[in-house]
Picture 1: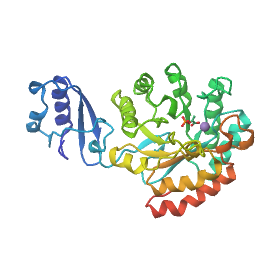
Picture 2: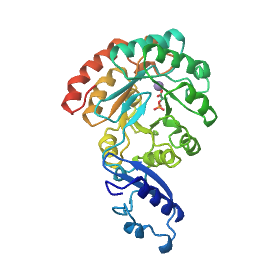
Picture 3: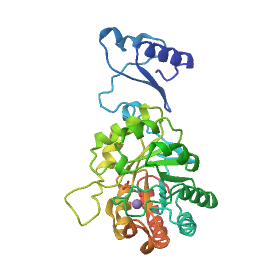
Picture 4: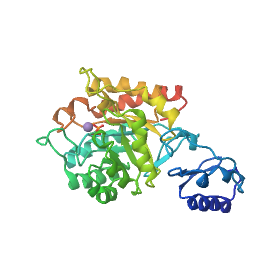
Length: 335
Ligand code: PEP
Ligand code: MN
């Protein structure tokens, strides 16, 4: 739409688009509103091109990429997603930190105190855990959700937790400010579609063998089902290298920033699997243009019930946050 198109102009265009059997998504940008029209092309009679002469329309532009709503073309200035009052994708970097899993009230409270003191903006902790073995600790489930919510409220941090099963969406959304889709569910399209109907922001992790275009198509499932609040997370991919748990793909950061308006954060904890590599790769992620980080922090990593080798002690986390400050300034961001 033209920069000064009226609400009536926009509503009129939406009506015309829908009459042509496309779905209209209104994307309100800083400068102008974009009406994204998604649907199957059905020949000349249904062409949108003639809308170019309609009041308020500046131009009709086909989005050539396979991901339409996620494409940077529809929102060149980038999206800012608000999670419990905390912005992701703005000038300030966002750090999500906390234990891999909620294990007990003491453990999650210890982690919450530690990450708050270190300067994290959001608290994380898994209640439903996707474990490789059915014999490993599976998470505290609903009890864990409540412990996480209480710990977050006590220290004043919004909380992020993983959603594994569409049946749990209402329950998890009641207790958490942001729902994480883990690597193993990254292309669970029925779950993604259901999350499109959820009003909470979604943290979508990259699958361990998901190509970047596939990653954005996964995000597109959520966006096209009606939830515009998606943050992408690079967490390493599986390669021939076994010295690290995964290979953190930092190429993904600047490339995703070119392709999409969605914020991109990096998880160097799962990306390396080794606590001593977390800080250097966190710094590298910010240098590469990430909008934030996800860092696993445990009050006593050696006693952790999952992902012990990659979790930072609170003091190390605080050191990492300090070392990020000059780097954030160097890339024109704040912490
Ligand atoms: C996690 O965040 O604890 C987790 C299970 O991550 P991923 O899905 O990236 O393996
Ligand atoms: Mn973990």
